[in-house]
Every structure is written in structure tokens, then in C-alpha cells.
Amino acid sequence: MYVNHRQNNWSEWLAMAEFAFNNKVHTATKISLFQVDYGKEPRIGFDIRKKGKNEKAKEFARKMKERHKETRVALMKLQEEMKRQADRIRKEAEKYKVGDKVLISTKDFSAKLIKRAMKKLMEKFMEPYVIKKIVSENVVELELPVSLRIHPVVNVRRIVKYREQVEGQKKISPPSIKIAGEKE
Image 1 (tube, rainbow, N blue to C red):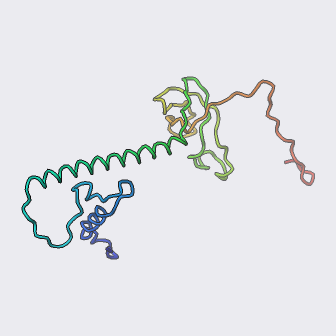
Image 2 (image 1 turned 45 degrees about the vertical axis):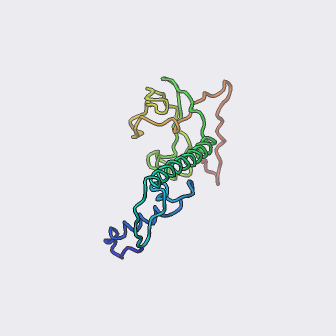
């Protein structure tokens, strides 16, 4: 199946693509979508249908219910496995209160917004800002300066709690360097 170079004949191939997708064996259920929906593989080619009795219809309905049950169990098993894998990297969100000081991540900021020459040399977190309002357990509103030009409502994944410096701890800047008689 190929679409022409102008890509204007894709609708001609849509039914065939859908058939191919539904006829493929799914990795989670180990059966095709046709088998899940109809209880049998599609008929490809000509076939003379014979009139059946109700017993066959009942048998077919029973097989369909069984197949749906097996599919549901396989999908639930897959869903549990996916949840287990996702929960391995999840952690409990920190609880914030109005008035808490937080640092905001610069991960999604451009270097131009923060007035830096290069993004790779930017700080990972900026300033301590105060939480103005708790919107939900995952979203807070910060008191941001107008000059920052970003929306004040942020997800808690983008902030970390600010920890004050320990008493007696000082930020000591390195001494300036003299190069050929000039100060830095």
C-alpha cells in the first residue's frame, strides 16, 4: 500500500489499512481484533454460507463470551504490569502551604528569558518565590515578579522547597584573579 507522491489518494487505501490492522495478532491479547470482536477470523475470498441451527449460534455466543473474558484478563494483566513499571519511578508529591518559599525550575525557560548567554550554563533553579495560593495538590500559584513574564500557576514538579542557609554558613566568593596587572 503506497500513497502517491501528492498524498491525495490516501482515502482509497484507508479500508485496506484498517483491515490489515484488525487482522494482525495483537501483542497483549495474542489474538487479532477480528477474533476479539467477531469470534473468528475474517473470511477472505468466496464462501457459500449454510443455514445453521440455533445450537451453533449458542456455541458461537458462548465462545465469544469466553474470548472476551480471556481478552479482558490479558488486558488487565498488561495494565497492572504497566502500572507497576510506572509506579517504580513515581514518588509522593511534597505538600506545600501558602507562604512557603520555593525555587522554580529553569528547565523550560529560554536563556533569553533569564538573560543568560547560553542555556547550558543557566542555574537549574531560580530565586526563592512565595506560594500565593494552592490551586490543587499538584498545582500552586506563585508570587512572581512581572519582569519574569511567565504564568504564575505552575505544577509542583517544576518547584522545590527552598531551604534557608544554616546559621553560620556563608557563601564565600572566590578572590578575583589578576591577569597581566588588571583585575577581573
